[in-house]
Image (cartoon, rainbow, N blue to C red; front, top):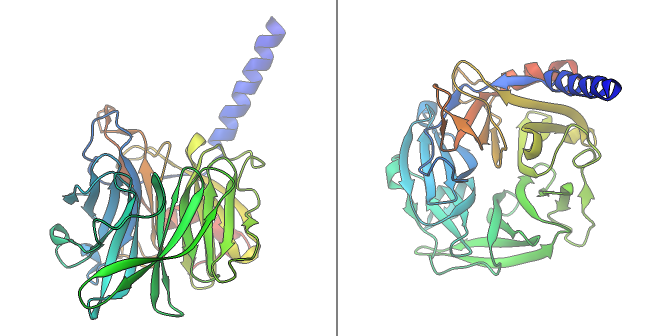
Length: 357
């Protein structure tokens, strides 16, 4: 018995040491808790929009119980659009529609199996829902979602999936008075999926299979086989299923893929330019501003300068267990981290080819 207790103590100590070795950063800003009950699994996915006056930039957050929530860069909630149970949200810039161009925010609506689209204007309390509320996808139980602005042909596409692994690609078609959708591609992944992000540089769709890892699908050669990102699943001891949110940090020639490891509250990074070399993980821990993040669903990254406070970009993550300054649990929210903290914690400057000036 003594030997067993000794071995158990060693194992516990080893786990604690391993956890302490994980690079940790703290959040700079947190959003107002989402509109939900404390125990609700409500907040899911964030998306960032940069205003020409950076301080007026917006954070969009999906609420799986109500709809779209809009936050200022300070984290204050500015508006809510209760159109249904929205799962994932994304932003696309300069989308041609109605004889002009608009920045848009769009989301997958689980209540109606459709895609909701709003045009973004100067007043976040006056977003305009422009998609046809009767327009539905062909999927049952829409789930993950992302947008793609194809600069080669000035077309905008929406990708949407469901828990059965079915994926659809829809082209947004707009004239002077209305917007519609045209199905251009559909396929089925090997397992349950959710997180998606488009790699504009390499023209790839990254798709996260929650129990299988991250896969890359060519956007042009649809007949080509998908490629699995190495060290993105069970073979990587740093990760624990589910594999959830996906995002890309792209600045100059630097190109990183980041995924959320929901089972152990970590985020993994890969160097896309170096055959997806695994760079390690980091976590968002408790700090002076707020608590850390746990059981993250969606993430987003903005790679450019936001304000003087965030000259190299920001990282956004959903927090599945949110606590106030008194240590009391409250409804879920989103946390924002200065990208420089992540670069320093993970020692990216010391890793070949990853110095970002």
